[in-house]
Length: 414
Image 1: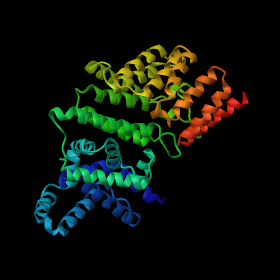
Image 2: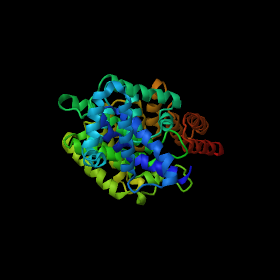
Image 3: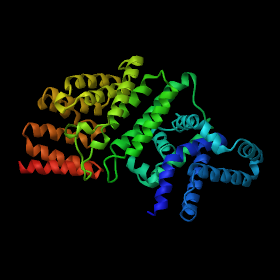
Image 4: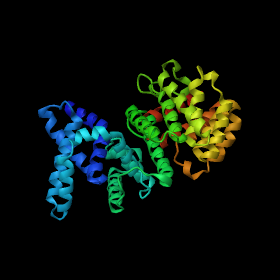
């Protein structure tokens, strides 16, 4: 990739959300705003290699998108009235790039709530958010959802059409509509973080840029809803997990497990911030929310200076609380891991074996991986090897596959 193209891509990752949000507030159409922003991106790819990267690339992109908006609307004869309205808004108001800077946080909030509107299916909300707020390319989103790029492209196009047909207003909901809409937005933000924390595909285990973007969006939400415990719970969870990001892989990109990580390299600032956010969430709502409960588990790891200091009994108890708050076979699997550390592998294997028939986990690689770990602790090496090999066939992440196959090979050596 030419150096300028890499710069354009980096600028796009930073500016996409603000650009689309600012345009959406003016044109009142999220899909049109995203198209205009994409046009500006294409112009940058065409012009910057020869003209150089401008001093203020975000303002440059906005100016180009603004001109494309005016030109596009003028070509639509049937929209003469809209031309006048849009023309006045774009030409006689304050410079839009300045305006966007003044309203950027509000605009990004509106874009988040619009992209996560209930008229869209949950997968469509997530795809649209990743596209417009995180600046991911369609093929990257397709990899995250394990679908072909063409399928994801159609999903995104349909989502924008649904929003347009439903005339979804570009606004932040209020009153009784706020709580369910906020829950949906928090869910998408955490999905974005998870994709960065443990990439579903691609050469690397983590994508720190996605984690950073998710935390930024989470902080915007927490500032918007300061009395909402789960907004703080989500921030706490993301910051505590992100504190371990740089220790999750070794020098060659290989996976370093939680118990093997160098805890002196954990980010103490993020831990401090995460624990403070957790205190705020618990004060507001106790452990009644899924993100707050998960953050409390992450805090147990953060507080332990060594693996031996980890309070696995408390973690098992917290997983039991979490299982009541947000029942899920994945939560049950994680609880089994905690129990294996506090009570031993035999008790945990009983719980894991009960999950083998769970249909939703039939393609989840961590189920056979956890089962293999437990079998290995019980010296059932042949069975453990089979489970490691099966787990390796179920993951698309090459780093995870390498780790699982390495463990399978170690079983063969024993």
